[in-house]
Image (cartoon, rainbow, N blue to C red; front, side, top):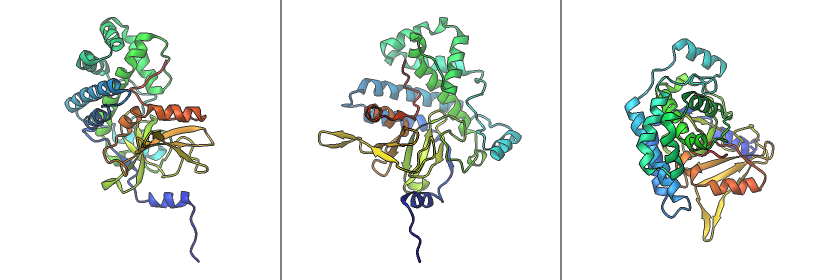
Length: 309
């Protein structure tokens, strides 16, 4: 007699042949910038999205110049595979020696287009204590920054963008086989950072296969289609979307909510819009975060262009 499968079991089996991990594209920031520019016109946050596009363009210029970073030694990679540890661990990592140079280059590239608050912070950057900048960068990597200082609050997205360039460069130096496989948790298996959102892919990744997208290094890891990424619960998962005056708004983006941990994580679908980008579409749908927040769910995704006091 045939066995009837639950929706969760069907989703699990559908993704069983998916590649467990995906490295970022060498043009990851260029694609992100293009998507941001396409989303900006007529958007309530048009100026912010247009600036974010310029910042992503500057990130791509630096990534092109930097290229892939040499990977850790094989002994380190082997230990990480054996114990399921991220080989590019961001939480306890030392900042690269040239991280400040990357920050200053990004600041120089975007200052003509930056909002007034960021322009003022960039002007203060040469005299701002380097040890405080480094402490903020390490806090952003750990996810425990305290942004009561107005200059630090203004600089945080620029520091986040710098860290993204550095860790994407490091990720591009890996092979997919260097990253621990088979882990569907809430942290990137390459660097340990949380996801910004999930993306349902089409094409060579497998039609309808879902990946979580890292907020830092832009690697992706396969996750079951119907499962809370932060806590792994599969029961009672629900979805919310934005509604406009003439029907669904931002049709390719939904928020997945979990009744167990009360977390919300967005899913962007290439099945609905092949041009989506997890990072860009997350920024463009902050109103969806407010909707699920009102329903009692907290945002689980992290976007390094978005910091609140």
